[in-house]
Image (cartoon, rainbow, N blue to C red; front, side, top):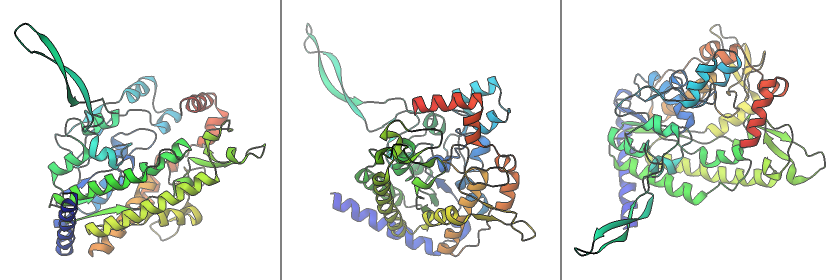
Length: 422
């Protein structure tokens, strides 16, 4: 039975790939859809809100292609650190952001990407249940006879409340996969792979890595997408080296202990446990996992007839050489770096050191547009990275996050709280 299902999935993918070869840009983007994670939903500044959602890469690319996506607008949860640090968000703003909610809703979003998601949650987590496949045993009482009231154990759904990003982002529309099966998109933004490996950087450990689970759920996601029969094209991207993001910085233990040296979270001033660093062996494990995962992404992309942007290579180049910001007169006012912006030094990351800022999403989008144009022979115009930089409040008025956490009283309190709960 499993072999037959795999065969049907392969045939559906083949038919979709053949259909993509003859589709025009207008036909392909007639009804775009998106699954994904924080990168697709528009998380930066440690929150999700309309101004960040409007600048997320699926929204930007769709607009450049002459189309659009619909989504539930969020107002949090959590805070926009830039607004707080610049004094643009007072106590009531902070309280409302931390609680979170919806600014506007749609009955069926075509953009279903959710912060924190991965391919497992794409299949299993809805706006109402953390795992729609979860089951538990429950007593069911009944009258065995007219005088004997007893019970039997029966299996029922075990619907636990999901996180707020899923609650506000998906509401009652189902899981991300169920949403796509209702929308039946003609073009798909289909990457939700980052959190399968980003967890190592955020938790400075490798226990979260599970290649079997990634392969199983990635394959099942692609099979169900292909089985819809509506897709004419799509785009995937490889995952950059998560051990090189701005969130991590090198640390050498003063006592020379190898397992206390490596990569630590930027907000930690020191390391008190091996669990607080990725040592050399762990970095090698992450690198091997990332290589296998990215190879799978390229292979699945080819099988689906999708464009694949190799963002691992792009990010490595930016990390090494920077990204020129070219103005309207052809000059490059600066090189943007793979960090949050600093005075006289543009950056591509937000203040958490993990997610792209406005300029970063423009760069991200342009790399996807380049891959889509190359794959399908389109001429989708690029996003102006210069305009993104010029209108990015964080790049135009930078905040030195390290200096804030180290030298301000509020920053020291925030750093202490993070170190306790992280």
